[in-house]
Amino acid sequence: MEEQKKVHVMLVTFAAQGLINPMLELAKILTSKGLWVTFASTEKAGERMRKATNTPATDKFLQFRYFSDGWGLDADRSNLDGYMNQINLVGPKSLTQLIQNLASQGDPISFIIGNPFLSWVLDVAEELKIPYAMLWTQPYAVFAIYYRYFSGLNLLPPVLSDADIITDITGLPTLRVGELPTYLLPSNPYINLSEALSKTFKKLKKVTWILVNSFIDLEREAIEKIPDVPPVKLVGPLVRNCGSNLRGDLWRSADCLEWLDVQSPSTVVYISFGSWVVRSEKQMEEVAWGLLRSKRPFLWVAKPPENATGLWGLPEGFLEETVGQGKVVDWCPQVEVLSHPSIACFITHCGWNSTLESIVAGVPVVVFPDRGDQTTNAKLLVEVYRTGVGLRTDPSGLLRKEEIERGINEAIGGPRAMEFKENALKWKFAAREAVSDGGTSAQNIQAFVDDLLLLL
Ligand code: UDX
Image (cartoon, rainbow, N blue to C red; front, side, top):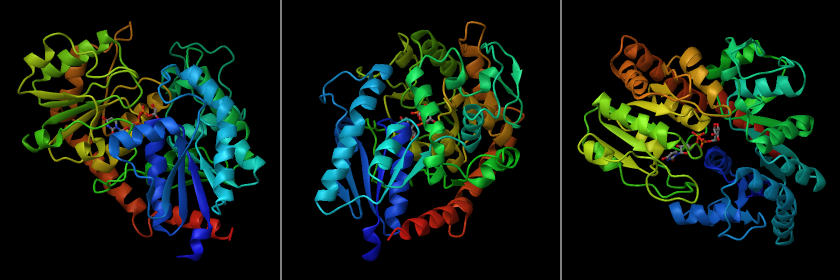
């Protein structure tokens, strides 16, 4: 054990919840194998994690270290493009300094694992002659779509509109334009994110390992149909165990488990749009009245935008009208919520962590994606994993209350409700199998660790 501490792995992550969570789970697995791990993110992320969940400075073989993004802790980071520009400019120097400081304290880094949205971490690793692996935090299928797109294997039509053109770039079930990852589309407003992805894919040959937060059984079809991507290893699902108190939430959870405890089994609709998506007030109003119309108990995470506090977008009178029916919070312990016996279905924005967490908990879904990989993840949930219901927006893009009510009723009590639950349970057991001793993901992790130990 003592010997293995000489391999010191640094995990570097962008300060977004959807990227912090799987990276932290990977950190826990690596330390459980006796490796010494430094989890690194920005100083602002560190401050928020400490405030929200008392994230410690060290936990056995795991230490948390933070680097500057060049802005003070109170600066406004709500403009993503501005923030990406800033961290791309300052991050390489700050991270290099952190790595050099560790080395000068007798704690040198022997391996770095980064994620796709900070493409410069690979440059830092290269400069310092430290081998690098990437943790891909979306499905393998989405990795393959990007890979084939950026390497020119499947070009999209030269004049790509967001209209519903049928296109088939993957060999997966035919994807309409609206089901591709939105960062490939002309309407994508997050140019810095698509640029980061493009840079990452252009440098892929320099990456020694590509670890994917997914598991083979879940993506067998994609893996078989899209074989010509570089060697990737599926090591997921990287989802926190309910019992684990070591967490990296950026927001403090509201109390809601006691409320769930007094609800009847398999009755509650859980609804959350993740850490980043903010729906318009008009959309929130439709969601609110859809929940009311369903007459079912609900737990709704109405998270406010960055820089705001309290509950977001609830129409006037909603809380009063739903007293006794539901509970609204600004953040919750989602993994615990999804595994609670009272939960019947999950209305999700289909972030990949939420998708995997629904699978791990065996909970049927109603899909309501917004951006990035979420549109493709929604397609996978409804048409490949078959654990739930898709919804139709109106021509203006608004999801109406009647449609939300329909989705809830179909997922819980419709003719296919039993099929959704059976499929959800099938994936739950497959996920458990993948990470248990001898499972595909457990074996892939072990192969990765064995490779790291060769660095000794
Ligand atoms: C982002 C992207 O939007 C997503 O598409 C990509 O796959 C990962 O990065 P995000 O939108 O935040 O993530 O969604 P998701 O991937 O679902 O991650 C959110 C995380 O926050 C989940 O692990 C979820 O459990 C957690 N969460 C969310 C809470 O702990 N409490 C909440 O109230 C809401």
